[in-house]
Image 1 (cartoon, rainbow, N blue to C red):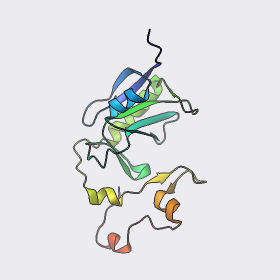
Image 2 (cartoon, rainbow, N blue to C red):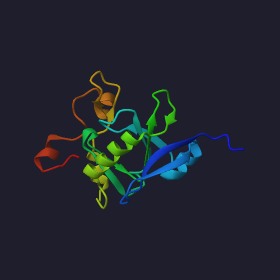
Image 3 (tube, one colour):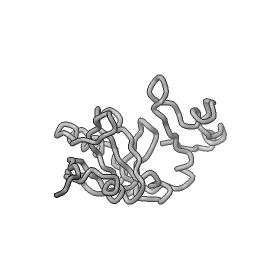
Length: 161
């Protein structure tokens, strides 16, 4: 008898249409789906949805999946969207959440986008531990307002996502 909990998720591989799947809710299965160690990130503006990604996907140069302008970031590799119980457990994603995630993907699709190491190093990373909900990761680490770039970066057309 299989005692593993099954959950309904929305899975999106880069360049493909998102698909609803019922999966086994286990660390091993989630790691298999995203091809590596997992990290979880909320999807902006969609309540109680958590995205499960490969935490080293950019270092492994996995294909671009979606732009996340609210975080000035790019999700790469396979993305699994699940319901967030807010208690550390994943739960079934609802039909309404699926439609919102699909709309977000359609509006922010990054299929075929090529990114390089220089661009990755200029991305801003955020922590949701700030009072206003987000503070730049570099600021959190180093206590400054600079995100790690220089004024020269902006002067020579350095781009941010």
